[in-house]
Image 1: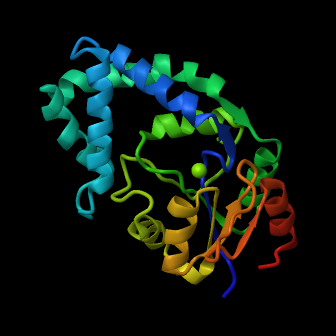
Image 2 (image 1 turned 180 degrees about the vertical axis):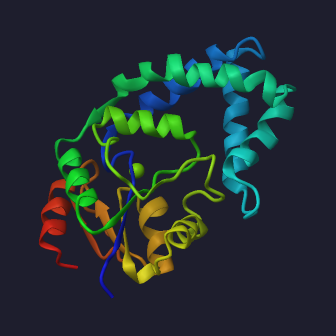
Length: 236
Ligand SMILES: [Mg+2]
Protein backbone atom coordinates (compact mmCIF):
# COMPACT_ATOMS: atom_id res chain seq x y z
CA UNK A 1 0.00 0.00 0.00
CA UNK A 2 1.52 3.39 -0.91
CA UNK A 3 2.48 5.84 1.80
CA UNK A 4 0.07 8.80 1.82
CA UNK A 5 0.76 10.22 5.25
CA UNK A 6 4.04 11.11 6.95
CA UNK A 7 4.26 11.78 10.68
CA UNK A 8 7.24 13.87 11.78
CA UNK A 9 8.46 14.13 15.34
CA UNK A 10 9.72 17.63 16.23
CA UNK A 11 12.35 17.68 19.00
CA UNK A 12 15.66 16.20 17.83
CA UNK A 13 14.03 15.25 14.54
CA UNK A 14 13.21 18.56 12.79
CA UNK A 15 14.92 20.77 15.37
CA UNK A 16 17.86 20.24 17.72
CA UNK A 17 16.98 20.84 21.36
CA UNK A 18 19.47 20.79 24.21
CA UNK A 19 16.91 19.05 26.45
CA UNK A 20 19.29 18.84 29.41
CA UNK A 21 19.37 22.63 29.44
CA UNK A 22 15.93 23.33 27.99
CA UNK A 23 13.90 21.28 30.49
CA UNK A 24 15.33 22.84 33.68
CA UNK A 25 15.26 26.34 32.17
CA UNK A 26 11.62 25.82 31.17
CA UNK A 27 10.58 24.58 34.62
CA UNK A 28 12.54 27.36 36.30
CA UNK A 29 10.93 30.06 34.17
CA UNK A 30 7.45 28.56 34.65
CA UNK A 31 8.04 28.36 38.40
CA UNK A 32 9.04 32.02 38.51
CA UNK A 33 6.05 33.05 36.41
CA UNK A 34 3.64 31.22 38.74
CA UNK A 35 5.40 32.20 41.99
CA UNK A 36 2.35 34.06 43.31
CA UNK A 37 0.64 30.67 43.70
CA UNK A 38 3.48 28.70 45.32
CA UNK A 39 7.27 28.82 45.65
CA UNK A 40 8.90 28.24 42.23
CA UNK A 41 10.41 24.87 43.18
CA UNK A 42 7.05 23.63 44.39
CA UNK A 43 5.41 24.80 41.16
CA UNK A 44 8.00 22.88 39.15
CA UNK A 45 7.39 19.72 41.19
CA UNK A 46 3.63 20.07 40.75
CA UNK A 47 4.04 20.56 36.98
CA UNK A 48 6.04 17.32 36.81
CA UNK A 49 3.46 15.41 38.87
CA UNK A 50 0.58 16.72 36.74
CA UNK A 51 2.53 15.86 33.59
CA UNK A 52 2.93 12.28 34.84
CA UNK A 53 -0.81 12.12 35.52
CA UNK A 54 -1.50 13.44 32.02
CA UNK A 55 0.77 10.81 30.46
CA UNK A 56 -0.96 8.10 32.48
CA UNK A 57 -4.36 9.19 31.16
CA UNK A 58 -5.89 6.64 28.81
CA UNK A 59 -9.50 7.85 28.90
CA UNK A 60 -10.47 8.67 25.30
CA UNK A 61 -12.98 11.23 26.59
CA UNK A 62 -10.38 13.20 28.56
CA UNK A 63 -7.96 15.39 26.62
CA UNK A 64 -4.37 15.69 27.77
CA UNK A 65 -5.16 19.29 28.68
CA UNK A 66 -8.04 18.19 30.91
CA UNK A 67 -5.98 15.41 32.47
CA UNK A 68 -3.16 17.84 33.25
CA UNK A 69 -5.40 20.40 34.92
CA UNK A 70 -7.39 17.76 36.85
CA UNK A 71 -4.12 16.96 38.62
CA UNK A 72 -2.49 20.39 38.55
CA UNK A 73 -5.23 22.61 40.01
CA UNK A 74 -5.89 20.70 43.27
CA UNK A 75 -2.17 20.35 43.94
CA UNK A 76 -1.78 24.13 43.78
CA UNK A 77 -5.23 24.79 45.28
CA UNK A 78 -6.13 27.24 42.53
CA UNK A 79 -8.90 27.47 39.96
CA UNK A 80 -8.38 27.33 36.21
CA UNK A 81 -9.66 30.91 35.89
CA UNK A 82 -7.12 32.12 38.44
CA UNK A 83 -4.08 30.53 36.89
CA UNK A 84 -4.72 30.28 33.14
CA UNK A 85 -4.21 34.01 32.36
CA UNK A 86 -0.84 33.82 34.13
CA UNK A 87 0.11 30.69 32.18
CA UNK A 88 -0.97 32.35 28.93
CA UNK A 89 1.23 35.35 29.74
CA UNK A 90 4.14 32.99 30.49
CA UNK A 91 3.89 31.43 27.02
CA UNK A 92 3.56 34.88 25.43
CA UNK A 93 6.34 36.70 27.26
CA UNK A 94 8.76 34.23 28.89
CA UNK A 95 8.69 31.06 26.78
CA UNK A 96 10.17 32.90 23.75
CA UNK A 97 13.37 33.37 25.78
CA UNK A 98 13.97 29.59 25.63
CA UNK A 99 14.74 29.94 21.94
CA UNK A 100 18.46 29.93 22.76
CA UNK A 101 18.27 26.18 23.52
CA UNK A 102 16.94 25.29 20.06
CA UNK A 103 19.05 25.04 16.92
CA UNK A 104 17.43 24.82 13.48
CA UNK A 105 18.49 21.93 11.25
CA UNK A 106 19.55 23.01 7.78
CA UNK A 107 17.61 20.29 5.98
CA UNK A 108 14.43 20.61 8.04
CA UNK A 109 12.96 23.63 6.28
CA UNK A 110 13.70 22.21 2.82
CA UNK A 111 12.17 18.92 3.87
CA UNK A 112 9.03 20.54 5.32
CA UNK A 113 8.61 22.65 2.18
CA UNK A 114 9.07 19.62 -0.07
CA UNK A 115 6.72 17.34 1.86
CA UNK A 116 3.92 19.85 2.36
CA UNK A 117 4.18 20.78 -1.31
CA UNK A 118 3.78 17.13 -2.32
CA UNK A 119 0.70 14.90 -2.24
CA UNK A 120 1.49 13.59 1.25
CA UNK A 121 -0.51 14.57 4.31
CA UNK A 122 2.07 15.80 6.80
CA UNK A 123 1.60 15.58 10.57
CA UNK A 124 3.79 17.13 13.24
CA UNK A 125 3.61 14.18 15.63
CA UNK A 126 5.30 15.81 18.60
CA UNK A 127 4.77 14.68 22.18
CA UNK A 128 1.35 16.22 22.95
CA UNK A 129 2.10 17.21 26.52
CA UNK A 130 2.61 20.91 25.74
CA UNK A 131 0.17 23.62 24.68
CA UNK A 132 -0.08 24.29 20.97
CA UNK A 133 1.53 27.71 21.39
CA UNK A 134 4.68 26.13 22.85
CA UNK A 135 4.88 23.66 19.98
CA UNK A 136 4.27 26.34 17.36
CA UNK A 137 6.98 28.53 18.90
CA UNK A 138 9.52 25.68 18.76
CA UNK A 139 8.53 25.02 15.14
CA UNK A 140 8.98 28.73 14.39
CA UNK A 141 12.46 28.75 15.97
CA UNK A 142 13.35 25.81 13.75
CA UNK A 143 12.02 27.50 10.60
CA UNK A 144 9.35 24.85 9.99
CA UNK A 145 6.15 26.55 11.16
CA UNK A 146 4.84 28.25 8.03
CA UNK A 147 3.71 25.18 6.07
CA UNK A 148 0.26 23.62 5.52
CA UNK A 149 0.36 20.64 7.89
CA UNK A 150 -2.64 18.33 8.12
CA UNK A 151 -2.29 18.19 11.90
CA UNK A 152 -0.04 19.33 14.75
CA UNK A 153 -0.64 17.29 17.90
CA UNK A 154 -0.88 19.23 21.18
CA UNK A 155 -2.19 18.77 24.72
CA UNK A 156 -5.43 20.61 24.00
CA UNK A 157 -6.55 18.13 21.34
CA UNK A 158 -4.74 14.82 21.97
CA UNK A 159 -6.17 12.21 24.34
CA UNK A 160 -3.05 10.05 24.62
CA UNK A 161 0.68 10.62 24.61
CA UNK A 162 3.78 8.81 23.45
CA UNK A 163 4.66 5.96 23.78
CA UNK A 164 1.01 4.79 23.88
CA UNK A 165 0.17 3.36 20.41
CA UNK A 166 -3.29 4.93 20.91
CA UNK A 167 -1.60 8.31 20.32
CA UNK A 168 -0.71 7.18 16.78
CA UNK A 169 -4.08 5.47 16.33
CA UNK A 170 -5.85 8.73 17.15
CA UNK A 171 -3.85 10.60 14.49
CA UNK A 172 -4.59 7.97 11.83
CA UNK A 173 -8.29 8.00 12.78
CA UNK A 174 -8.48 11.77 12.44
CA UNK A 175 -6.87 11.64 9.00
CA UNK A 176 -8.80 8.51 7.98
CA UNK A 177 -5.75 6.51 6.92
CA UNK A 178 -4.68 2.98 7.76
CA UNK A 179 -1.35 2.23 9.49
CA UNK A 180 0.01 0.71 6.27
CA UNK A 181 -0.42 4.08 4.52
CA UNK A 182 1.63 5.94 7.12
CA UNK A 183 5.30 6.49 7.91
CA UNK A 184 6.53 7.68 11.32
CA UNK A 185 9.80 9.62 11.37
CA UNK A 186 11.43 10.27 14.73
CA UNK A 187 14.61 10.02 16.77
CA UNK A 188 13.33 8.18 19.82
CA UNK A 189 13.24 4.37 19.63
CA UNK A 190 10.79 4.03 22.53
CA UNK A 191 8.47 6.98 21.93
CA UNK A 192 8.48 7.20 18.15
CA UNK A 193 9.57 3.97 16.54
CA UNK A 194 8.42 1.04 18.70
CA UNK A 195 4.76 2.06 19.22
CA UNK A 196 4.30 3.17 15.60
CA UNK A 197 5.82 -0.10 14.39
CA UNK A 198 3.56 -2.09 16.71
CA UNK A 199 0.57 -0.41 15.15
CA UNK A 200 1.76 -1.28 11.63
CA UNK A 201 3.20 2.03 10.44
CA UNK A 202 6.43 2.10 8.52
CA UNK A 203 9.19 3.82 10.47
CA UNK A 204 12.32 5.85 9.88
CA UNK A 205 14.58 6.55 12.83
CA UNK A 206 16.53 9.83 12.66
CA UNK A 207 20.15 9.33 13.69
CA UNK A 208 21.61 12.85 13.55
CA UNK A 209 22.41 13.07 17.27
CA UNK A 210 22.76 9.51 18.45
CA UNK A 211 23.92 7.60 15.39
CA UNK A 212 22.41 4.28 14.35
CA UNK A 213 21.48 1.83 17.08
CA UNK A 214 20.52 -1.80 17.05
CA UNK A 215 16.86 -1.43 16.23
CA UNK A 216 15.18 -4.51 14.84
CA UNK A 217 11.78 -2.83 14.61
CA UNK A 218 12.69 0.22 12.51
CA UNK A 219 12.18 -0.20 8.79
CA UNK A 220 14.86 2.40 8.12
CA UNK A 221 17.22 4.67 9.96
CA UNK A 222 19.45 7.52 8.87
CA UNK A 223 20.05 11.24 9.24
CA UNK A 224 17.48 13.90 8.38
CA UNK A 225 19.48 14.65 5.23
CA UNK A 226 19.38 10.98 4.23
CA UNK A 227 15.64 10.89 4.89
CA UNK A 228 15.19 13.93 2.64
CA UNK A 229 17.06 12.23 -0.21
CA UNK A 230 15.05 9.06 0.29
CA UNK A 231 11.68 10.78 0.39
CA UNK A 232 12.47 12.67 -2.82
CA UNK A 233 13.22 9.33 -4.48
CA UNK A 234 9.97 7.89 -3.10
CA UNK A 235 11.47 4.49 -2.53
CA UNK A 236 9.56 2.85 0.26
MG1 LIG B 1 12.20 13.58 19.46
